Image (cartoon, rainbow, N blue to C red; front, side, top):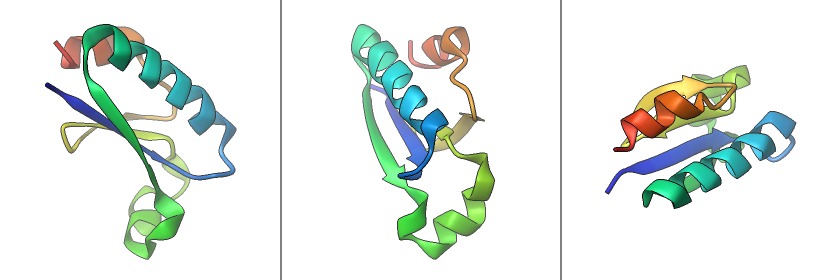
Length: 77
């Protein structure tokens, strides 16, 4: 089973949209997902900065800013 992590921050509208899309896609393919707030850790904030949302699939960076549904689905099968 694959896992998607959304690197996010509380005041990010694009992150809110991404959470809805990732939840829908993961639910449809049986993958799990979670959210990590980059502002809770200085190292995460330094690494991801203004690129949030960033999407990790099984711990590896998959993309950022916008969910590419077809590409994400392909990575989760």
